[in-house]
Length: 103
Image 1 (spheres, rainbow, N blue to C red):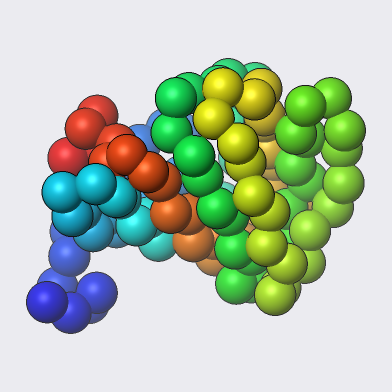
Image 2 (image 1 turned 30 degrees about the vertical axis):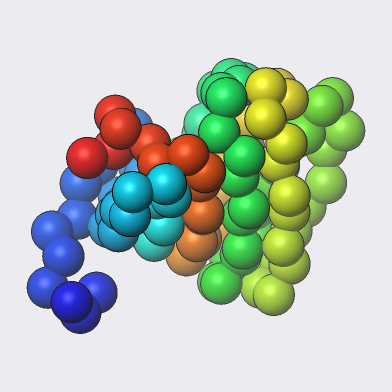
């Protein structure tokens, strides 16, 4: 498969994702509009976020920081988190187990 051939889906306002699924993982490639927010939530999935482009404000377990290109954040299962794109961003997330609701 080639990423250029995967249809982008707007999963939430301002978050346009291309999803790759295996049996036990989902790999998400996001194009995020400036000022788009993800409200605080948690999920059973372990998640690893990688900032490819832009500045992304992220709160994990009550602690807020700004992340820049090259930064990686590990998000344990069931820990509350939220985020906001301070600039247009490209993010990459890996989830385990697979995110069925993203299929």
